[in-house]
Amino acid sequence: MGYVAVKGGTIAIEESINRLTSERLQKGLVLDIKNIEAGLRGLIDQVMSESSLYHETLAALAIKQAEGNPEEAVFLLRAYRSTLPRKHYSKVIESEEIKVERRISASFKDIPGGQLLGATTDYTHRLLNFSLMNESEKEAQEWLSKFNEEIGHNSEKSEIISLTFPKVLDYLREEGLIAPCGNNDVEPHDVTRKSLEFPSSRSERLQILTRGQTGAVTSLAYASIRGYGAVHPTVGELRVGQLPIHISHPFELGEEEDDYYIGEVKVTEVEMLIPVAVEREYGEKDLDFEVGYGLCFGQNETKAISMSILDYSLEHPNHAFPSHNEEFVLYHIDSVESTGFISHLKMPHYVTFQSKLDSVRKTKTTSKKDEVSMVEQSL
Image (cartoon, rainbow, N blue to C red; front, side, top):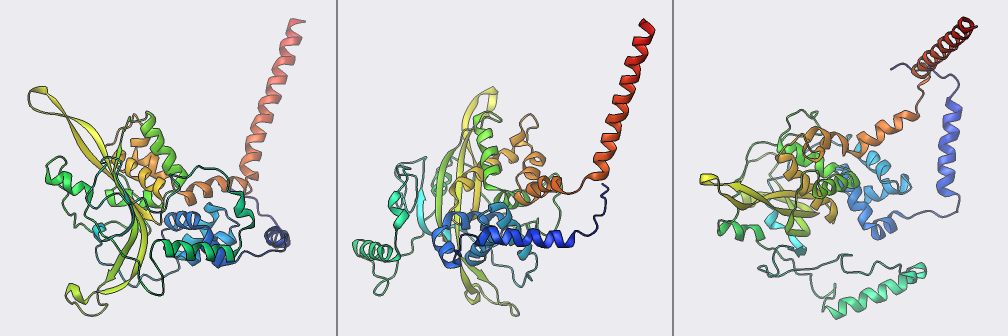
């Protein structure tokens, strides 16, 4: 694609950037990074997931710089991520180790350990709370202090109990109701270091789905449920909690107990049950269950559920349905790729457009000449 070089544009570009800064500061207020980190938890979790970089403070900085635009914040954070050295690889993580804050199942009323509703908007009335307009830090601290007293927790005297639970689906496997899930020790592909190729591996698909734009992933999963593939899933288990991360000694090979604990990341994990008709002997059909899987940074439940639906859909390719077509799904859900290509349409296309314009002019001129010729012949 050809572009015409624009001379003398540096000053204009600098002034455009200054104008951008003035738009952010024109009301005379500056957003504090700590306030963004404390009050925009959902947006921070979304940006961390889509940028595949778990750092709440840096996500808050990207959100501030992008003035709340999620796509731009993800772009900024991914660009920064690309500059970081990769010093270690974590040990393989078993998700049963999640220190659960929220755990529900839509498939079973009673699950071992019980349902933990945790923090969620699922049970709120979705009405605007106008009292937040004038909320003060003093009121917030008083409410929090009272809440901690009611639940018998005082940060100075006790610690929050961390809960771990076995997987709900493991009980179904013990009954032989769903197929056992063996470990796959094949080293996963890294989509941040090698371009995606088709057919893709499941590790590549899961990485791209968890990095995918939340709205796009949700939209395609909804399309799959609504009719493009007719997937009708049920949440076997959804859990939100802290996942501990360990690394091996960087220079010495030791036993597992010698591993280093380096911290925790908050994740949302979903195991989705999808009923499927299976043909048995003599043409008989029985109902069986297959599993779709989703996991992403932060408390990002809609995305994790949608991810699990698309994971199942892409495991069963069907070119009749876009949501089951890995090339269609994986190439169109990435926010940086999609917004980048859409945004490039604002860049100069003078040469190509002038070429098209010349073609249209020639066509119009030829058409007018033909019309004149026909009129003269009729006379």
